[in-house]
Amino acid sequence: MLNLSRMLLMVLVCGPLMNKAALASEHPGYVDAPDRRTTGIGKFYMDREISFVMGHRAAGWLNRPERIREEMPDEVVANMDLEPNHVVADIGAGSGYFSFRIADHVPLGKVLAVDIQPEMLQLIERQKDEQNVSNIDGILGEIDDPNLELNSIDAAIMVDAYHEFSHPYEMIDGIYEALKPGGRIFLLEYRGEDASVPIRPLHKMTQEQVVKEMSVFGLEWTDTLDFLPWQHMMIFTKPR
Image (cartoon, rainbow, N blue to C red):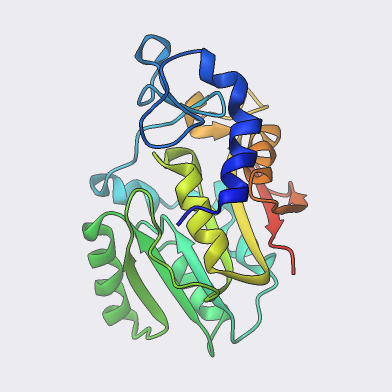
């Protein structure tokens, strides 16, 4: 259930958007504006058009060899500073590219691999059997709910996924409620400020836009790590 105080804050933050087009039915702050559609779904959140979702048929691209160089996944996980017993939610886990790396860092904990596509979760289950990994649990999420238990996770990571959420407010609300006090969100997005980053515009986000959207929840912008070639690694913390 959405927190009333955050709903009121949402209305204050997004109020100016409400006159630009007809409000989407799901939540104030969403705007359906097909006439403004570029390459996304024609639905806007805080003046950002939401991108289409990458389907499971593109799973091979998620595991491309160049990704090691382009996204430095091992360095990303190392910079999460995880404890061995942490429970980490990999939101939009896809083929498990980050889930399995994180699992190595939390041998006494667990990775909750959340995805809305059953086919992706099946890929992860097959890899678990092949690699004899037991501390990853697949969770079938919904477009507006990560299906995580309250106060159940120490951290959540979203890698190139948040910009595709059709219901970003509800998803972050669910993640926020699942985080323990002091828990952290690691949000990786291609840098929208940099036109040279070879990714379609709607698959990139500026730091300013991300901070604006996370501020609705009172999440503390803790840091941005810019060691990656093309992405921001932004860290937000739930107040204790």
